[in-house]
Length: 358
Image 1 (cartoon, rainbow, N blue to C red):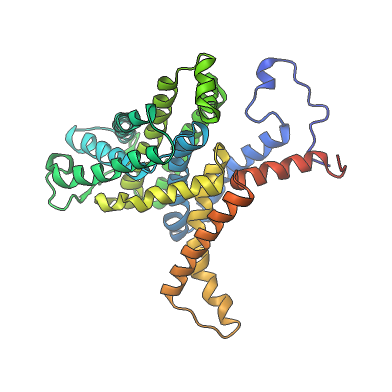
Image 2: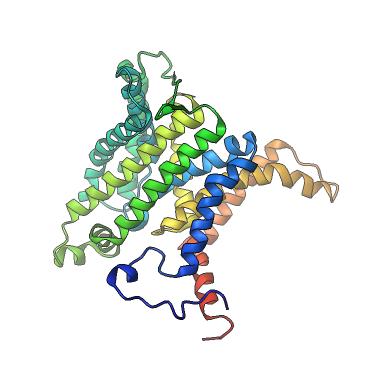
């Protein structure tokens, strides 16, 4: 009975078009943000920050960028790992080659490098679609691997392509502790997530969804497919590139091209599928699921089987993780193609009507 909008009258278009039109949603969201910024840093340990929270925030950002391309515009991409690598190495080169380069501008410039790279490999989307486009974007992955292993200037002439960064700081505050890294990732995710949410609700977002639903009909009503598709690749690649720079600078510290392999691209695609295509909230659900599930399985599966006197090795736990991932992806594609976000939305709608059956 508490999740109602009775008495919440909208007296302007601005009030009617809020991201969270229901007061209860705004209160809950403000409470979650307050807890994320102040309560979690006071209670979480270094292990929780480094193993769960920081990877979750960065992967949420990358999944958000991929969801714009795949979920909102309908352009299948398997080159997300390459876009993250370009963002990471682009930010690295700006950071080490320009004396006194601040961290935030370096991250933005790395994202812009990924934007150019993404638009270049997004050009085939003007002619092909579906599986052919997925293969075309997969070529970006192999090209990026070759580029960072063979062009020495991009890796500061490191023989193996391995590079590292140190002395990170934002506005004079060092980014060394786990809490400071968490705050940085959370702030970047909050800003870009808010911008992305407003973007998909605007005219450009409606063009993306029209192209996704039926590109021929969208072209008939005056939407330019070239502009819509390339803009989706540009925005998506920028967000993924910033996520790649954060992944390299904040989470890894030292990395090589193998850190952005094709496995990472598939993991991001799984996040989007499980979380929910065409949903900003789905990126968070999918990232939480993919990041937390391996830890839960490693910790609780041996203990649960031990109750029945069954011992399981670490390799078997890893195999169980892959089998569960595969089974869940198939289940979501068949039963709930819109993922966890649709289940969340359905639950909210039922709460707005409960206890009435209609």
